Length: 105
Image (cartoon, rainbow, N blue to C red; front, side, top):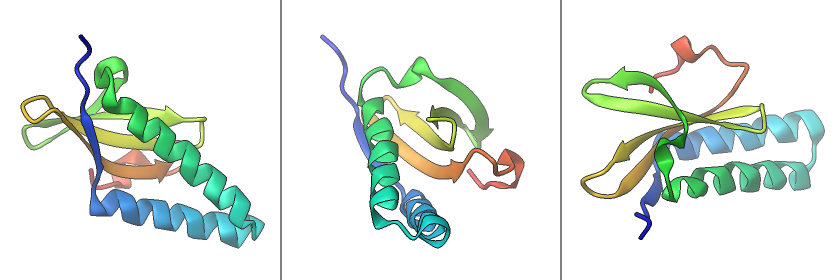
């Protein structure tokens, strides 16, 4: 039987999504394009509910391991796995053009 995790977005990740929408609207003026990207990102995030360790480890944040998954070569989702509570915490969602070292995970 597969273990299914609950996926949760942090407030910071929700803010990241809002920033992504604003940037898309500023560039393309397309609400449809912004909605499409939000759906793609969220679909990828929620797909972590099964087998979340299929991706690469990124860093340590205190005593927690941070993982990441790429979204169509444009965005990166950073997350941590809480096996005890069967939870995936989405910590950040950023553009892949952004310097990872400048991002607080």
